[in-house]
Length: 211
Image: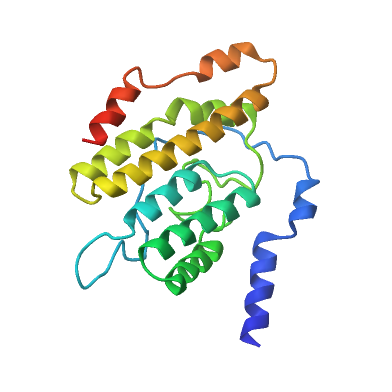
């Protein structure tokens, strides 16, 4: 009975993907995205609570990078699967499955939490593709991810291996976002030019992070 209730709850929470894909994207006025921030694994430990370490914190930060932006339900599922894989590599398969299941429900875009899907936006964002204006908003704040990573490194929360993993995930996401931006902007060259707002010393900043 409890299992049936849980399955119904998940279905109602996320809704049928095929139905939502046929609906036009909602236009939400005055949408702004804040600079990237991470609270690690949110209400869950960042590592073994008995050793005060942060063994899987990097998994949660990489997960937050994608949650910060938001997007479609399919993109959320991919982010959750990536978290599960990372946790499994650091701990056990069961632990990875547990955390993946937890964020699948607890990270819903419909909950007004600080760790929801699309939490970077000042309003609740439904599961949908980013508009050209949303894309521009993200582009102007994208490299704030690097500043957040540097902050975590300076606090001693992540080690060299974890920083390296996060830089790889940052570059993967950046490449995906750049490709999406090119398609989403279409022939609007003015918006394309405006959106190319990146750190002038981005490469040097990354190299410093890896030192």
